[in-house]
Image (cartoon, rainbow over all chains, first blue to last red; front, side, top):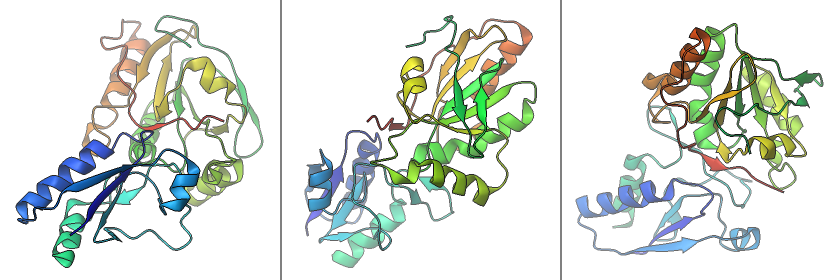
Length: 103
Length: 168
């Protein structure tokens, strides 16, 4: 299983995203390594189809697929937790569901 | 860059209705934007403080480069204010980014509290956790209570937390 964390330094949420991702992988008994990919400029953002930081892809699939037409740029992603709050990281249960789908 | 105790720079910036707004004190200046999860997560708490402190002038200022980030254009700001409908403070566009540079804004959000003389008395985050609405902008409120009572602010500076300002 490939697990990627794409991140940009202008957004401080990537350490939290990585910690939660690694915790969930452990809890689900998945031994995959997290590959960190730093996005450094707009050209790379377009090339990597990066809708913002952090973006987690498991088996090549975004754990929270961005909406259609979402631009690719150096920005922070806006997620929603399952109780409706705005969050800079995906809801952990969305990450867990993505891990289970890919397992 | 404005430090604690310094007299804060004056400004005049357009709001989403096209009216020029000039700094009046005491004031809370919030550098913010449309697309940052930290700014959005804290917005309601800051807006509630603006409603609760009617004697304080609150200004939300968007300093981001709208060319690279169209979601922070003046038009997008106007659409947001119209859509949300209940903004208790003007939303100002710092197109040249001069105001943000003068204050030394780093992130969205980044808050600056000025006393009646225009001196900077608090700078930083609204409260310790953008994901916990129950904190209710406690650091901002503590600072305002002290300023309005003529007392020293016990915690005059905290680290601003949020998305980096998108400089040109």
